[in-house]
Structures are given as structure tokens and as C-alpha cells.
Amino acid sequence: MAYEFYFQHAATFTVEVIQIKRQWTKDRKGFENSKRVPLGTVTLTDVELAGLDRLFKFYRSKMDRMTTNTDRITAVLKSGGTVKATESFIDSTAATYDMKDLTLLSSIPARLKVPAE
Image 1 (spheres, rainbow, N blue to C red):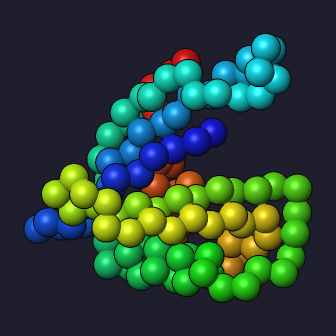
Image 2 (tube, one colour):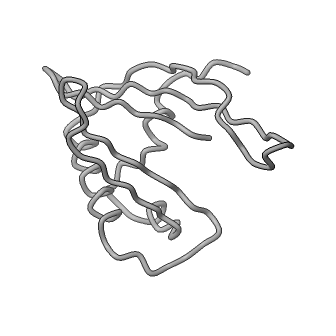
């Protein structure tokens, strides 16, 4: 499952969540995005924001452990529609699931009611 997250800081810190549906294509022998489904918006607490900070601190650190599960994360900072910064991370450690006090990206859409397929 793939998601896009649009973080916005105004009076509160919110995240708009969009689910990216993927479909296997025989001719390309791989997955491609087939549909974008807006799931809704989540308001983050100060504790969750601190957990996201710790998560991205981990992503920026050296990761030695490898598993077959790989998460690919790209963070883009935009202001007024202009890209100000981009960071990409590849996490093949599966370590975040064992770490305390992190806000995992997967926990954000879990707070929303996902429409039935």
C-alpha cells in the first residue's frame, strides 16, 4: 500500500492522506499507480509530531540492518507551490516497528476510516 501525506501547519498541524492504489501490469512486469483515493485529514498532537521528528532522525541516520521489506520515503518541502527542499530515504531495516516513541507514517492513515473496496 502506498500513501501520499500532505502536512500543513496553521492553527493546528494537519495531514491530508491520499491512498495510492497500485496495479500489476503484465507488459511492464511491475506495479504502477492506478488510482488516487483521498482518505481524509488527521490533526496531529504534539506527541505525534515529536514522534515524527524522531522517525525522520532515524531515517537520516546510518542504517546497518537489512530485511526484505523496504520502505521508500520522499519528503518534499513546498512553500507557495515552490519546492524548497527534497529528501529521499530508503529503509530496509524494519527496525522502526520495534522502536519506542516514534510516530510511524502507517499509523496516520490507520486513524481514518478507509472506504471498502
